[in-house]
Structure formats: C-alpha cells, structure tokens
Length: 110
Image (tube, rainbow, N blue to C red; front, side, top):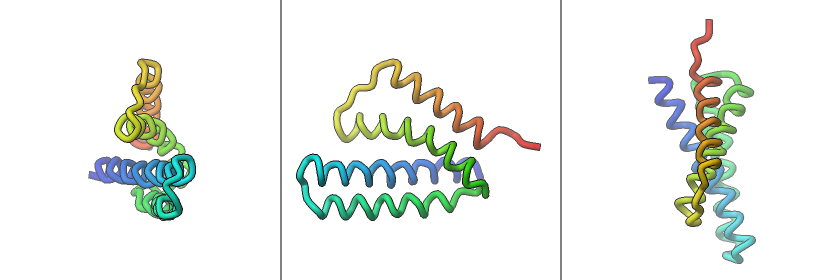
C-alpha cells in the first residue's frame, strides 16, 4: 500500500510541476497572459508540498527518484498537451529512468 501511495504522489507531483511549468510557458511564450503565469506559479508551489507527503523520509532519495518521474512525465505531457511524438530513444530513455525510480525508491533495504 505504501508503494501505491508513493506512486500516486509522484504522479501528482509531476502534474503539478510539469503543468505549472507548461502554464508559465504558455503565459510567456504563447502570450496567454498573467493569469496563466499566475496559475503556473501556484501549481509549481503545490508541487513542493506534494513531495513532503511521500512515505519515505529521505529528501535526497525522493527528489532523485522524482527526477526519473519528471523525465517520463514531461514526455507524456508533451504527447498529451502539445502533440509531441517521442521517438524510440525517448521512450527507451524514459523507461530506463522509471527503472531507476523503482530501484531507488522500492528496492528492499536491510
């Protein structure tokens, strides 16, 4: 159950961080305005709080593992929000990163 909770929190963190950055990008680069930028800043702030809810108490481990989730999530966001089509190297790289997440976070420790 702790693994499932951790995975859900990683997904929520990714949505908040990647979504927030995307909103800021849209506000600035696509000239959508301050409302988009403000929503992005709020989402980015929420990301910081979501990470504190992880069941593991080691900040460095959580942030390192989240890096892999961020990579895979960014590619997925690009597909969903921007019509990006990852190539096989993108997909393989993301899978390697997710394997790293699993190893860092869920490997049995003595």
